[in-house]
Length: 233
Image (cartoon, rainbow, N blue to C red; front, top):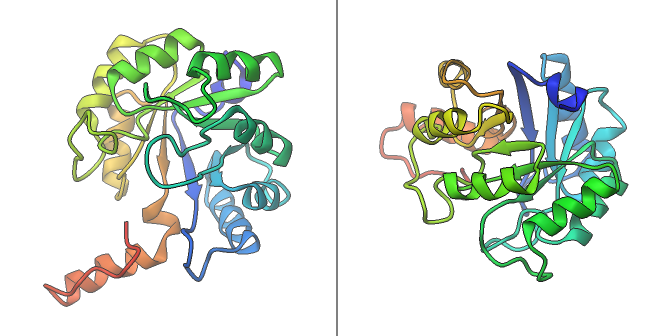
């Protein structure tokens, strides 16, 4: 196992991402957010977009997990080998890639993308939506398996919190692979439950770095029935 991956065991990874049209959608802002997360104890930062990857890499000492989203449906998390390579050139230590069994825009298989990146010395985090995706990703040699897309591909129901059932199934089936839990981890108690369930590490994004959504949570508590703000996740 690569020392970088080994060093994430039992740790918190913070995802710093802002969506198009939001006030915080700026590389310098995301870099400041990432630095704050590092000072708070984050063992790694996950981030999106070449400018953000570059800015964050220049601010933090912890590993950077980079991805590049293009589009908003189908395979859009680092959808091609070109996108993955660009993330590396921008400074990513690990590249996160859609690891579903859906067709990729460049016509390559997930295994072909992993093989090409491994040939260039790049670590791959497989963003999976089901146990079948994880089997494919494990067979392809992905360095990290993640529950990132559970509830978003139509293969599993979207749970209110982290998909612990999926996580436990994955940990049991892939004891030799680091399985990271990402997706809807909104409280410290949920993060603790994820580690208790056997996750190698836990990724928390919205609950730490998305003030628009967090504000909506509090407003809903104070003003029952108030509509969620546009862009809340």
